[in-house]
Length: 187
Image (cartoon, rainbow, N blue to C red; front, side):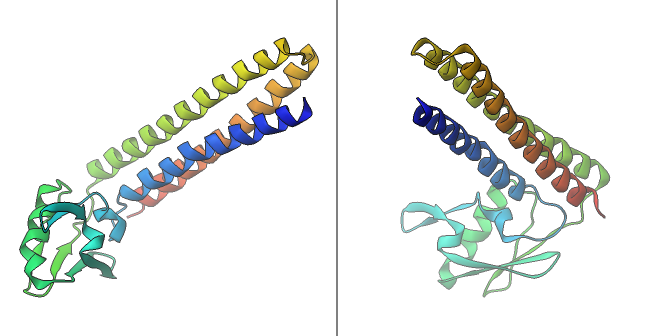
């Protein structure tokens, strides 16, 4: 029975890591006024008849805090990359100098910063919803284990352990969202 409890706790922790890693990826995509190659992660480019990620056909560099350089491996891809970035609805205006695509990142307005903070909080709330769903599954499993021979005190202790894990992961979500909020609002 002890092994089952340990396995349940470990699987709950493993499952709760998934909403956290998803939150990390979502927060990376929210720009905080500084150029970051991950801002172009969602861009797909047509390459010899198939859609591939931009990073598979070009190098993306940040020479300074306000500029992205996208240097394609093949110069014939420049106009295709430029169109893909425009069609990506990221609010960027790419420029082409014949060798690479240059993207100047405009400074964020106060309204846009607030909107990005709202988006960050929404992503944090989505992560918490995922964590609570995993908690519900864990609590249901604890009740099933009680029917299979776990004592009532054992079930209650297990539920308390699950809740501690949930609180720990929720605090981690709050910390990540708060850090991103500070990063976005910093001028």
